[in-house]
Length: 168
Image 1 (cartoon, one colour):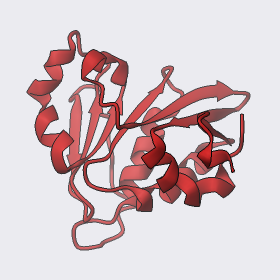
Image 2 (cartoon, helix red, strand yellow):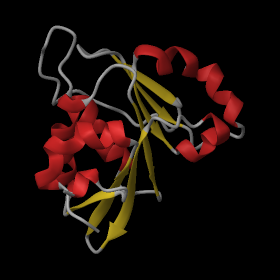
Image 3 (cartoon, one colour):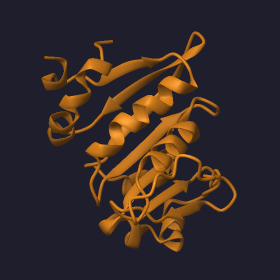
């Protein structure tokens, strides 16, 4: 079974709708304290994925928020969304010049009990959490190759996504 292998997991996202569908499939598997590291070139789909994931999570009262505006945190560096699961902190670290600057954005508060999405996690350097799930987006033809990499606990949690994942 692919999900029990030591190799990264991956799937091809043919278009924006496929990216949204994948985010919606992943959302119910997440828990407070999870950290998702979104890597890839500019325009590779990191923000589109984050938006879809944030919208897929029910609001505090269980309301459907698929139409909520979810701006990119490129200039604000962090956006916070209240969700039933936990607050969602969406970081965009592209503009950071030193890893320690993340503390000024509330990193310690977020990393405790929130669901954390991090674009440009390379900027974290040694602060990058080892237990995080890394989602790497790469151009492949007109679509995107999404590669997921996490520890054994993540691979176990992701078993329900097996029909969407295929070996590289």
